[in-house]
Length: 178
Ligand SMILES: [Zn+2]
Image 1 (cartoon, rainbow, N blue to C red):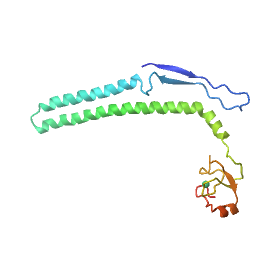
Image 2 (image 1 turned 30 degrees about the vertical axis):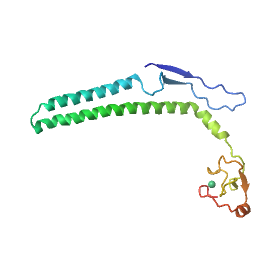
Image 3 (image 1 turned 90 degrees about the vertical axis):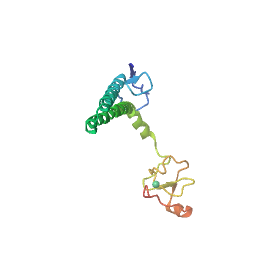
Image 4 (image 1 turned 180 degrees about the vertical axis):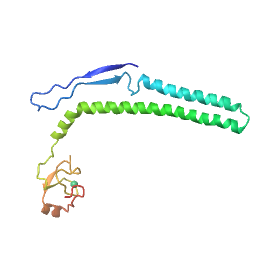
């Protein structure tokens, strides 16, 4: 399986956009197929499983020819160890995939980082209030500080006073300490 080196160009910046830190164009090693493994991973896995299988057959064959239990025990142990090598081959196969996926995730996160922070900075609360003021929304039983995660993104968010809270029967929020 070959890999294509795909160059990801830096996004063209709009004229009005603030000068966000531009990442270096990254080179992703994109496999031909939608899987994280490469040929070298299959080779390592195949060698481990092959060694284990050969060990199991040899231990079975030799051990079966021994007459006494004491003579059979070393070959039994050898067979169990060979089974362990086969399992190790499977574990290696999975570790290769996890490492590859983690590396690709890191590369994508690195590439998208400047725009992700820009996008997060552009998400403002629906109502701009002082930090000590409280908000609530239709259907909510509690009042929250504007930054509270439980109030974020709620529609019809509106400021409430202590008198409003008493009138509406709104409780305080334990998460934001309102
Ligand atoms: Zn809250």
